[in-house]
Image (cartoon, rainbow over all chains, first blue to last red; front, side, top):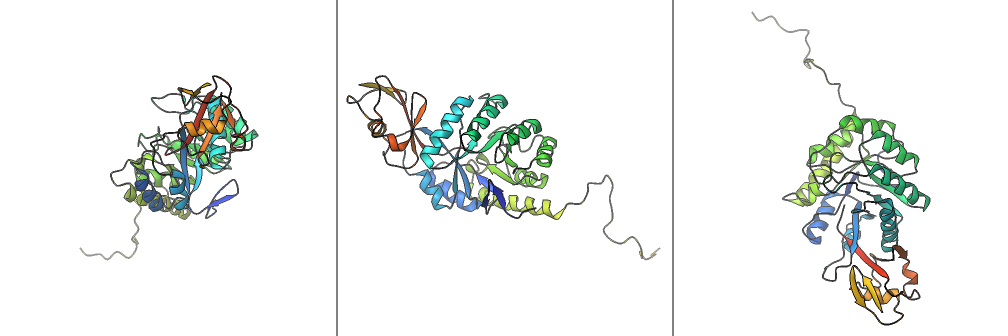
Length: 257
Length: 68
């Protein structure tokens, strides 16, 4: 197992990718991003708001983060491709967190539009990191399309439900030759640790930190959880057993009665 | 001339450039983190001065926000 996270030949010091949605303001965001230790951070594009203050780009770059623009809010491959092209113009990067949503109640990805958009963007020279359903077949199709990573959800965006289908996630980890990044659904530190213990290469989360009562403290908790989960995976856990197995020697017990 | 700028009808001078639309949107013009699409097609920053808007063009000027 490589010590460092490598996506598309680029090395990262942290296995935690931070999403910037949901923070109350840029100051709190900056502090939390720093505490998270992340060196890759998502951001989005929206119509210019003349009343907006401060620059998220400056805050993230000052925190040492590479920018990962997303296509949040897109429901079709066409809109997602255009949004990715806008992001390439705005941020001088060909990296994109590809999101194509199928439903505004669950925010689950639309697999058909997602794969279509991924194929178009890869052909256009983008480094594509798709937010995907926890479907091993779709994950394989995205990898085959040339995506630089696959980012299966644990549970719906912002739900905080953690990992709903560890079996599917295990299958995705087992088959993938590109990094697997758990994306969406993380509610607290144990969810992030579990994702890493299952074998994910990284965890991407936003709401769990940005909407926590104390975002900076939760960011630090997530940093530690991702590190702990990674080390536990590398260390090789003991098998689960139905019955106890004594750790103290069973031989040499004195007869006392 | 009339265009639709970020969803609102706006009046700009005749033969206005993309850059004029960017400034009219409230964006800083040069600033990193800003991008433009006209009728669904991205216009590269290097062409903002030379690219003239057509009557009724749908212009979207976007900037970085928190997300994802």
